[in-house]
Length: 322
Image 1 (cartoon, rainbow, N blue to C red):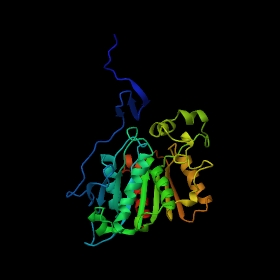
Image 2: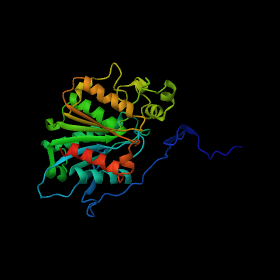
Image 3: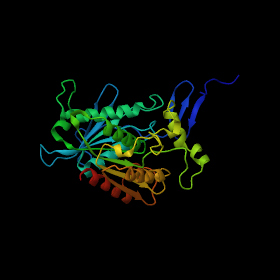
Image 4: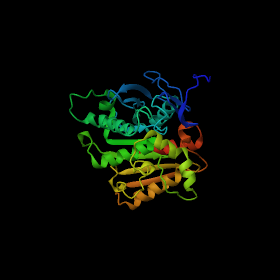
């Protein structure tokens, strides 16, 4: 008789993730969790963790202040990982955001949204919006919201930015569309958003892609894995903002946009198309594009110490501290 100790795999998306028939999930790429730095500042940045709601957490980063009452731009940041990997509390994210907060001299709220498949989409989008609402609520008199002193004392609410890498870049796009249609507490406005190597995909080949390559790609399979009930599949507007019935990009709720791409990244052609579509949409903001030669997906998060990574982080910092 065959041993029943070997668990049966339901979905194998190696080298990313495996889902077993008993419901357990094995994340094959992971970075260890690290604690915040409440006293022993990294790069002059102190950090702490808090609960935004019963289901949404965040790590806050406060760079070194020049004066006790200094006001800083606020960045709400969404990590990458295909909606099924990663965390605001990992070594990789912690290292990257420490450097970004120090370089931009910005107060960063790094959002811990819930992951699929345990929490399938659209949960991550809802959690991400909850976090942004929480930040904006610091401008309102709401006795039901426990306010965070770092934000009330040091947040400049005329300089609210959102940003993210990979799946986080996709979240930024969808949050900006929602912010364009639905007011935030205190009528807070998002000044700008950055999308680094944003995760957009679709059934229609671009450039030299073939239909088969698209459908066999992990990018295709992961979307259906993290959002199994998605209307329209891979051509849902949340992952494919270029479909006919997608909301117009003229509705993006910010005045500045920065899209960062990498030459070797298979997502780059859709990132370029995104910028072109924004420009043609009638959106009345300012959009910029940066494409880094010779680099691949999220290179600046994986290894922020290279010269090209440092240059990109400086570019993001100048966008936020503009």
